Length: 289
View (cartoon, rainbow, N blue to C red):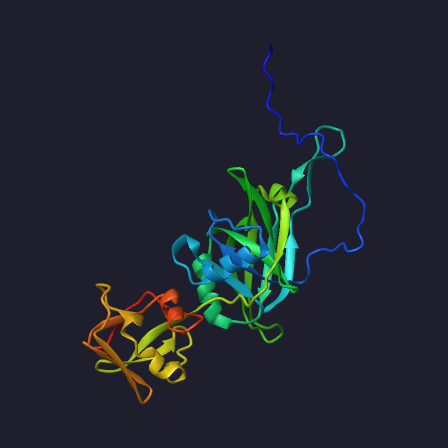
């Protein structure tokens, strides 16, 4: 028997084209949720939302990075039919052009601009989220089971300067992968049921020998008095060896460390366990000597 040439044809699939009474497209873009390209999530709404919340403070590849809000414009390009012409014949469709989306973000300023720079050129997966808090992604069948995950893409951020005639803004460009057509054909969506917010980086700012304030890393905003004695927990801090200080005390808007040395604030899961939510220590030590 002769061998067959492997085909990329999708087969004789049926198209169900009746227009329903509650048909819809994606709503106005509200933001996105970024996750590691190798991760995938449950299709069940409750389990998916629980995984998103847990991922915000998770470590390593389990980390999820949301950015919801502040988007004033959304400019898609590509995703159209690509054609080719041979000889004197008509143009023939040969595929779909790669899709790119530019998000115009007018909130967050230079601090958010700096943070998004950490994602430049990185291949990730991304759930677009619309104003109705619906997250869109693709279904992937892995080991015989269906899972939900974001679209494969690369990110680049640039900046639009404030010229007087236009306001400054962050431009985050999403370059979707060549397989976007197939991923979009397997699109699904899940409603977000809770607040989904990213983290703010925090550091210790030396205020004297053995003393420090708990401040936002980019803006320098002082949070010490906001959280007060809650910050006086030795387990929230570590030195370059990974050891916690013996004691940390709070008084008059300052933290006092014993022994005096170099310390950094713990990760988001450590702070969250102490009811200091939405923050994470930057990976830098402050010398308090």
